[in-house]
Image (cartoon, rainbow, N blue to C red):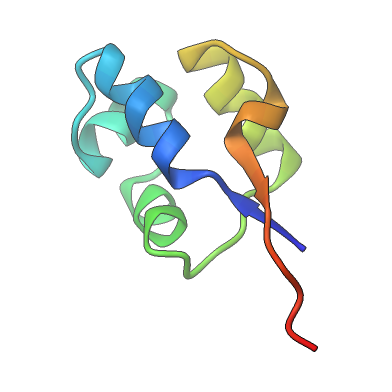
Amino acid sequence: MYRLHITHLKTAAGNCGDTTGYAIAKRTGLTESHVSKLLNRRSKPLVETLLVFKRTYGGTVDDFIEETEVAA
């Protein structure tokens, strides 16, 4: 199972001065509601969202996803 790598997103965003969900939303063009849902794990990012993060903050799409263990 995969999910947003929140720590990496916050680090990459923070390097650009974006320390809040609002700032991330403003810089990326995503809605503040969507960013909030992602940061609070109420939503999983679509590929398009990962591409926005990659384009905005650099790195690769893989940097913004992490694998989680599947409960047995």
